[in-house]
Length: 268
Ligand code: LER
Ligand code: MN
Image 1 (cartoon, rainbow, N blue to C red):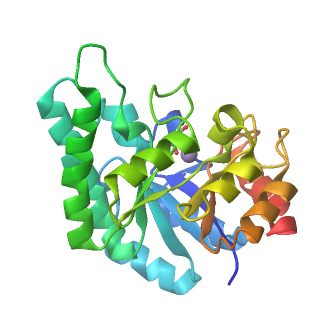
Image 2 (image 1 turned 180 degrees about the vertical axis):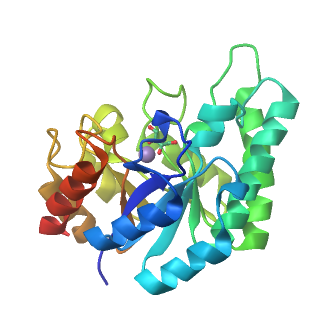
């Protein structure tokens, strides 16, 4: 068993808030990821029509890459719908767009994440009830599709609830559904959690996927997080899933993707 490494990519028209190194035809980015020595790619998608499933499956078998995660933040960033929206039709659209991405995920044996897609707690709204309704509906479909849903703690400057691993773990424990797990992102952990390594230890059982980015969201090695120590902690807790590089494409995309794989391969 070993920890695997993926890189987040998005189709060519994706917003900068997708935090991906490559915004291009997915097939082109897959090719680049394979050449750089990644084990997989995470697809940051807006809707299910963005993926030519037969063409991508063909590339997975020719390159040996996997797609461990379909990430969904673009639904929130691009269309403004989310799980806690005051307007029911927008909550329903968030669940149906998310369901479309779960269908894509089921084709590739991927997980899906809920990060910013959960939206915000809005004053005067029963936002937590809205969140529970949206997540409960999604989990029924996740079960049917056999897809695992990973709840991602996201820092307070982007979202106003479930910011720390402790808060996400409490929510996951209260929902208590076998398809719901946690995916910490060390960028957010650096802001919200008392210690990155200690928190990984504390919630080891729930952690099934990890986003990696340095303190400035550049490639690992370009900021001040200690990736040697973070990867050591992941190994020590027996984590044997996927980590995924979710970074800004700086100084430019190819260099960022190379920097990340070079730093992380030293420790993985
Ligand atoms: C956003 O900061 C992020 O980390 C995403 O993975 C969550 O949607
Ligand atoms: Mn993330």
